[in-house]
Length: 227
Image 1 (cartoon, helix red, strand yellow):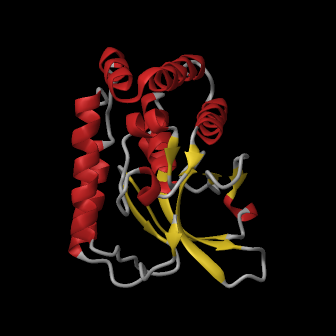
Image 2 (image 1 turned 90 degrees about the horizontal axis):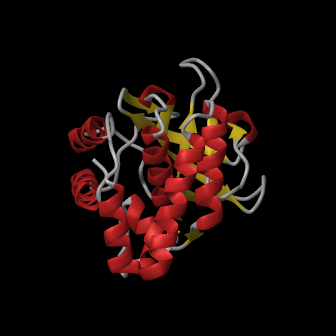
């Protein structure tokens, strides 16, 4: 999560390409658990192994549950196990997009890392992509009268296409309907089905750079056992 920057403007071709890459890459996925465990042990030691094993056990528990229980289990797992941190402190660089294994291994992440890890995990649990949106928002910090806003990412879940979404957020522990998150203003959301804009057409800062970051995440995920 970073101080709100100029991300509202005209949707350009670079962002569209970025969104299409995200969409195509998250349609189907599988897990090579042995590969993940091996890498977790090599990179992060016993704590990394414990995190990946706990993630695997959580998925096993959630697999046969209804969607509402899957949402709760996945949201609780990451919000309780992963500590929020800034990319510069975790990775020594700005705006680094971590894979789920990296987030689990370090037990730290920023808002994008939480949202991506939850999205990928729910996809692995069989939640249809049309019900999930990675959503960029403006988050008001400091109460209803505050003028301080930050760029933030959450995961939105739609029980049906026209239903009010539920918001999975690392800032709060419970899952709330969007109408109860008056501190958030949607900028845009995306999934494997397309792009949705709230309030204005979005423009990502350096969209080609964001595409490169996402391609890097996908390549690392495949190397780490999620495909």
